[in-house]
Each structure stands twice: as C-alpha cells, then as structure tokens.
Amino acid sequence: MDVNPDDVEIVGDLARVLNNLGKLQAGIGERAEAKSTLLQAAELNESLMKKTPAIVRFRDQRGRTFLFLGLLKAGEQKFDEAERDIEQACTILKSLADEYPAFSQARADLAAAYGSRGNLQLQRKQLGPAEASKTLVRGLLEQLVAENPTVDAYQNDLASFHSNLGVLQFETGRKAEALASFEKAREIRLKLVEGRCVLPLIRRSLAESEFNIGEYQIEIGKPADGLPSFEKAGERLKALVQEFPEDLDSRSMLGRTLDMHALATCKAGRTRDALTMAESAAHYHKECIDKAPEVRIYTQSLQIHEAIMGEIRPKTSDDEKPKN
Image (cartoon, rainbow, N blue to C red):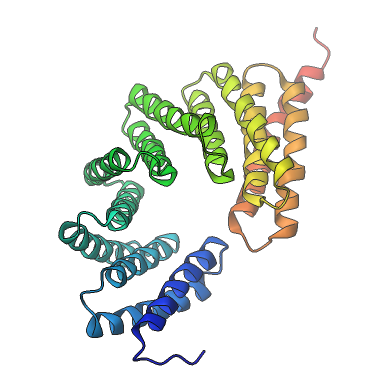
C-alpha cells in the first residue's frame, strides 16, 4: 500500500490498523505474521512521534504497540524481552495519562499495561511485584468506572481485574480472598447482563466468571459445590451458541465448561453422568478446530478434554464392575 509519509493522518490510521491486525494475528496463533505487523506499526509510530509529538492519540497508539509486542513475546516465553516492551508501554501511557487526565482511553490502556505486567510477574513467580501492579490496575479501573458508569467496557475490565486478582490470591494461598474476587467479578458482569448489556462478549465473560468459581471449588476439594456454577455457565453458553453459531469462542468455552462440569460430577461420585457430559464436550472442541485449526487454544482445549476423559473413563469402568 502506497502512503504519503507526510500525511500524518493517513500514516496514523495505517499504524492503528496494523496495531489491530497484529493483535488479531497473535490471537489466532500467527505469531510470525503478528510480529512483522506490529514492528511495521512501531516504525510508523516512531515516525509520527518525530513529526507530531504532541498528538495524543498517536502517543497512545505507540504505547499500545509496545504492549502488544510484549504480550506476543511473553507468549513465546521470551520473558526478558516481553518485560522491556511492557515496561516501555507503561512508561509511555503513564506519561500520557498524567498529562491528559481527561483522556480516559489512555488510563484504560495504562490499566491494561499494568495488568499485563502483573500477569507476567505472576507467571515469573514475582508475587510481590505482581500484587503491586494489580493494585495500580484497581485504582485506575475503579476511577474509570466511577467517572463513566455507562461504559460497559470499563465495567467488564474491572471484572477481569477481579478475576486475575483471584488467581494471584489463590497462588499465594489466600483462598477465601480468591473466592471473594471471583464472586465480585461475577457480580459486576451479572449486573451488566441483567441490566442493559446484551453483548455476546459480556455474556460470555459472565459464563467465564461462573466457570472460574466452579473450577475453584474443584481445586479446594469441594467439587459438588461447583456444580451449580458450571450448570449456569453451561446454560448461558448454550444460549450464545444457538444465537451466534459463528461465535467459536463461545463454542469452545462451552466445551471447556462441559469438561470441567464432567470432572466435578465425577469427583462428586456420579461417574456415568460425568462420562456422558464429557463425551458431549468433544463435539464442540472438534467443531472449533475444524473451522479454525490455526487457533491454538482450541487444540489445547481438546487436549485438556482428552486428559479429563482419561480420568473419568477408568472410574466409570470401576463403577460398572460387579461388587462382591
């Protein structure tokens, strides 16, 4: 595509498109293409900074590019490189948010950058720094929600924060706090869904919150307590799959929910019901892989499904053996 390098508006639009394309490519597992795309966006962003350093949206765009590059490298296990890029994103976006506090998008993007830094620190077992990053995220998102109570995206971001905080709390042995965080995430999303929001993303996010609570109950050895959460999540996801048959993410999430519901059911002593449920999950996993074989999480979900089947089948066979 031929672009006049002196037309900053067109160059800026192209950089934004490349940013979004790179994020999409990374999401479907095209890592090499994503890296190339994001590096092109970074090059354009640097050019824009030299020509128009005062244009706010270009500075925000530049921060987002570094964030996406950092996330891409974290997915490749290149943690040192990922940390440098994410820190650069935090620096750019914090400077912008401090200078222009009324520019909500900069604060939302800074919250995402801090959140990504916290996730990376958690992955590297840097629990103290991870908690400090999460505290910064909470402050930004709570302020954004208070100032923009009708913006569903900020509400959902806050719910995601509580979900991620729950993981950190569970990792550090604060299990009661973890459950409270997972329940807070569900509460926020339930209010959105019961109120004005009918977006598939938010509805799927609510199902994910219910899934997290069910999974938590399995982890603490109370699988029967997790069954109602898995049932609710499954009902929501089945409705989404029926309404939006091309929404593969909801279809994949339904498969994962059925698998974990089956595992909880098995651990609660109902092995035959568990096997039937797990067998129905395979259908959703295979559909997703058939339609989008390049998306790694779909393949990974099928592998998890097979591991769960491997745990359930022997117990089902044992139950069917005659008792002496």
